[in-house]
Length: 215
Image 1 (cartoon, rainbow, N blue to C red):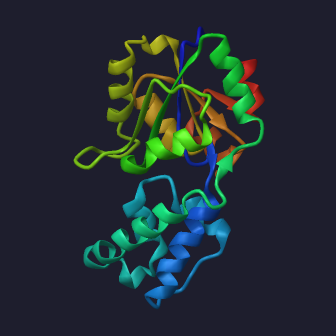
Image 2 (cartoon, helix red, strand yellow):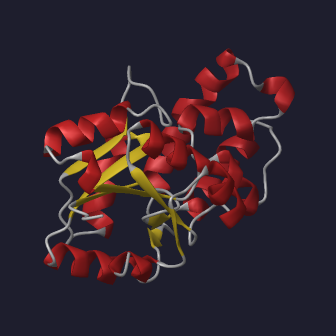
């Protein structure tokens, strides 16, 4: 395939953000009298948006809509203050993006992270990379794996599906890409396992960010 545009997931694909997410959620849980979780548990809590992250972090008996509504704004406010404390791009990713960009490949981001935090994060961590479209979860719109977010990216860029590759690290990303009619490459450096990506039907598996250069 000829790749003119790569649509990236954010958390676990472009950014190693698990420490800040875990720290922020554990802070809110502890403050409100709920048990906290080990860092690695958050690898499986994230990926489906902030609301489901909040639900999964709460004890099963407390996963009510009212409880989530009460704590989610507190988490979002605290995370907004600490979202860049430990977060960083995955090793080797920025040089790979710079090389691809020099070769004329365009980039976009499709994330379930709240849309309002996305532009600042991208400017902070990727100041020399141009992203044609940056979209997070927007109120009133469905979260991935609904393909609407990818459809919006394709509409804005005007690039044919056959020239677009989706890169992500979870089964949700595989389903999103395929629902949008795109080929999908699984990022093995991310938060989930080779088995999850294989069983979900990823078209390619990338061992490290530099693998993007040879795909």
